[in-house]
Length: 114
Image 1 (spheres, rainbow, N blue to C red):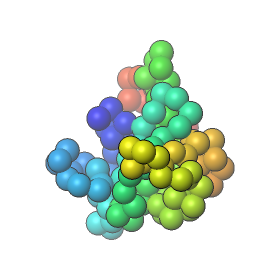
Image 2 (image 1 turned 180 degrees about the vertical axis):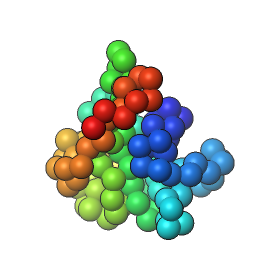
Image 3 (image 1 turned 135 degrees about the horizontal axis):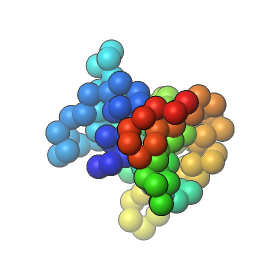
Image 4 (image 1 turned 90 degrees about the horizontal axis):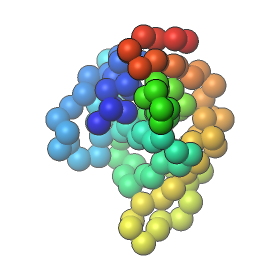
């Protein structure tokens, strides 16, 4: 849930009810946004029904956040590995970040740094 909060703040998104299937927020144009966050180097994708995908990397020690990707879902899905036994597909955040060079940083006090 903290990743969704960071994404909403950094990307000016409106969060939806946590039980909403397939997406976590809406952008100002009403597009559905799925938010994935991690303290590691991989995120797991399970649904490609959202219009946009936001990937947030959280620093394990400080909880500062970096949005490493924000854009259409399709390019990231094209990078993802095969479906695993749990029904999810893994994708490296490094590979996803290469698709979007507009990183946005926030420190643990919700101050936008860059």
